[in-house]
Every structure is written in structure tokens, then in C-alpha cells.
Amino acid sequence: MWSWFSQIATVTWLNLRTIGQRRWASGAAAFGVAGVVMVFVFVLSIAEGFKKTLTSTAQPDTAIVMRSGSDSEMMSGLQRDETRIIAEKPGLLRTAQGPAASAELFVVVGIPKRSTGTDANVPLRGIQPAAFDVRKEVKIVEGRNFEPGKNEVIVGRAAAAEFAGIDLGSQVRWGQNTWTVVGIFTAEGGLSESEIWCDAGVLQPAYRRGTSFQSVHAKLESPAAFDRFKDALTTDPRLDIKVVRESEYYAEQSRVLTGIITGLGNSIAILMGIGAVFGALNTMYSAVSARTREIATLRAIGFSASPVVISVLAESLFLCLLGGIVGAAGAYLAFNGYQAATMNWASFSQVAFAFAVTPKLLIEGTGFALIMGFIGGLFPAIRAARLPVATALREQ
Image (cartoon, rainbow, N blue to C red; front, top):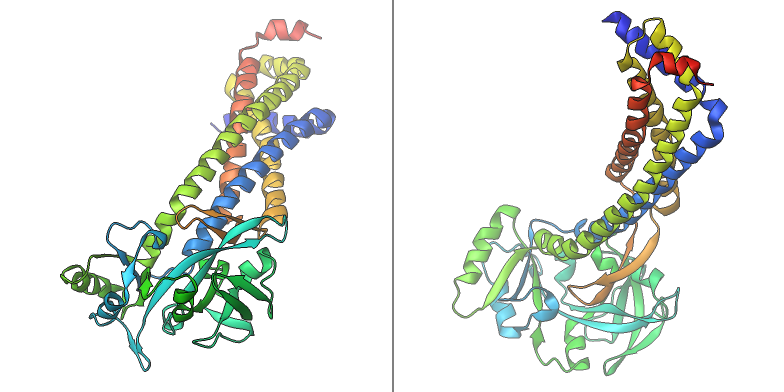
């Protein structure tokens, strides 16, 4: 057994030591794999970034109440009396200012993107004062908060960076009102940073919504209080509503787009990977062909076939691993944190987010490179092992 391991080490070291003699072919194979891994990680980082933005600040002790049968806030509708009943239910957190429940109105407004100048749908959310108790991650970082009853808005930092005309101090015309931007807020990178907030009582007449809202965002006493809160609402005959945890709501919203992007990324990676595998095959066949006499000599002096197979596979895996590391590192340096915006199909509005090249994606990209290396080295390795010794010694 020790002799077998010694044979593997000897042949593998011989293969790796001669890579420099085939540096152009070896470099081309590694470069091809690096390109595949970079594209693979880049595409999937879009899905990871979008999902992170929607779910990073969602809390299990926060509930969203909407009209029964609604898939999103845009499809929902609640009257003022219903929102007051919701705010009275047990399980809801109570503060010195009252119940931590914000009845909210959600509309979209057209704002040009800074990068292209084309209009995009941006969420304009009317909130009540309790919204800041519900979303404790929201902090004003520039300017001040809007004053209730006034045509003032505060803008999420991601929205301010992505869209034009909503800088601090700007005035914009939405609905029947002219609004002044009085503050910029952050939300720990969460979805709220893609939104614009104002007083719900001012937004309603601006869009002729009467006394209607679309949802109630409520902070619970604890995550365990959700069932008690939900049961109290769903058994009340005055209400026709659905109650979901905030974390589950946004996870569901992110599922469609992340699924599409992940499927697209995997398809592109597989198609490009096929080309990279052929490049690795060509490189390894050339390497085996160039060392035919060396391999035959080793076989003639007592080396078995399996160390030869393993050594060729090891060289292919090494080249592809090197390419995978380079590609993953390149994707991280080039795309991690890159700011972009895309459509959230659940709300028909833009979400500003940052690409997220996570450790999980880096590991997956490197693993994909090793799979390509294994496939690319397997058949050349088998050919090297099956080559008749006498025939090989006569070659070259």
C-alpha cells in the first residue's frame, strides 16, 4: 500500500513539475475555467444581493396584515376602521406612544434613473409614526424626518443613489402635491432603503385614496406572539384579512426573481462549462501525448495503471482549481457591492440593491471548477492508463 501511494506521489509530482513546459496550453485551460467561474458567480451574486436586500432586515416578530387573498400590498386594501381594530388586538407590542402598528399606503412614482435617464417605478410609502417603532433599523442620516401633515418626504439612501431628482432639498411633483425632500435614511441595507416615505394622511388625498390603506405593519411582543395575534384577527367577523410574518412575506417576494436568475446563471455556466471542459480535455490529451514515453517507461519498471490515472486527474484538477480561484477572486473584486436596481414583480416597483458575492457562492464556483477539471482529465487519464507499453515506447 505504501508503494502505491509512493507511485502516485512520484507520477503526480512529475506531471505538475512539467506544467511550465506547457504553460501556454495549461494557461489557456485555466483561463477558460476562470472565465466560466467568474460569470457563474457574477450572475448568482445578483440573485443573492436581491434576496439579501428583501430579507436581511425582515424580522419574525413583525407581522404584515393585508386584505384576504392579496399576494402583495399593491393588491390589498383596508379601511381606516379595520386598521384601528387591528391595532387593538392582543400580542401587539405597546409603547409609550401607543400600539406599534403602522397603517400604510403604497403607490409608485416615476423617477428617472441616474445611469440611463429612463423613468422607473419607485415606491412612495405613506406611513404612520409607529412605522419607526416597527422598523427600528431605520435611521435618519441626512437632514431630518418629515413633519406630519406637511408635503415632505424622506428618501432611502439606496433610492437617492440610484435615482435622479430626489436629492436632499429637492422638490418633486407627485399626485396632486409638490413634495420637498427633507431627509435621507438608512435601513441596514434592507428593502426600505429603496423607498420614499411620507405621512400617510398627506398621501391619501394626493392620490384620492380617501381613508383607505393597503396594509398594517405591526411589531409583536415576541415571535411567539404571532399565532395569538393572527388568531385574534382571523376569528374577528369584522375583518377579512390575512396575516403573515414579515420574514416569510419578503422571502416569498424574492423567490420568483431569484429563481429566474439562478436558473439563468446555471444554464449559462453549464453552456460555458462545456467549452471549458473541451479546453481542459485538449490540454490534458496533449499533456499525455507529450509524455507517452515517460508514462510507458514508468509502467515498464513496475508502476501500476491507477497512479497514472490519478496523476493525470490531479494535474487537471490543479489547473481548474487554479482557474476557479482566480475566477472567484475576480468576481468578488469586480462585483461584490456593485449597486444596481431591478423590478420587484410583486410590487411592480424598482428595488435598489447591491450584488452579494457570498462565501457560499465562492465555494460553489470553486466546486464547479473542480467538476470541470475532473471531467476534463478523466478521459485523457484513462487513455494514458490503457496505452500499451510496447506501443508507447516506440512512439516519438
